[in-house]
Image 1 (cartoon, rainbow, N blue to C red):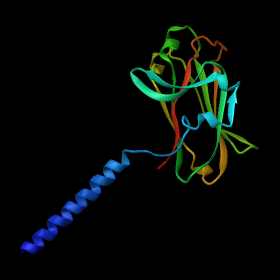
Image 2 (image 1 turned 90 degrees about the vertical axis):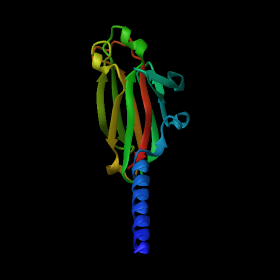
Image 3 (image 1 turned 60 degrees about the vertical axis):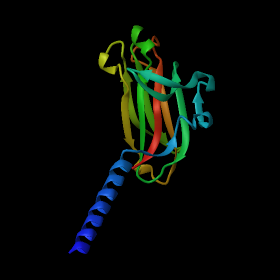
Image 4 (image 1 turned 135 degrees about the horizontal axis):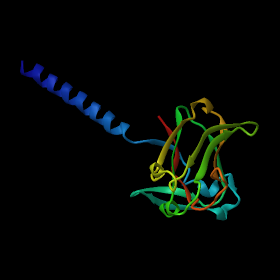
Length: 180
């Protein structure tokens, strides 16, 4: 009887250990491509590399490694999309931009295979006019339909609907491709 109890206890500890390991492991992202780290070699940087900077951006007390631009811009990376890939990014306007009357920034994300362009996101963020935009806007986009393909992931920013550039301090926070 002692041996059976010992085996049962070992099995229970083993199941709890494996379950705990799986639980803790699931909280971490499997980052396939960190777009901030690879930004210096990005395929597209318009109007020019000087229009961008990599920074630690803080919005509402939450800091993220970010790509900053204050102009209409386009940045793009050529990537081979892994299976089960998702593009994750947080969009925001630096807090100094909240105090300036403007119409926000239009953020757009798309993918291109060199022949076609698929728009995945189009979102205006206007923290001056909309207090609920005074935060990071977390975005997750499913890239699984492009698995195995080499595509360009393209980030665009434009002035808001009235083409007012006041307060257009746009940041792409912690952009990355993760595998689930």
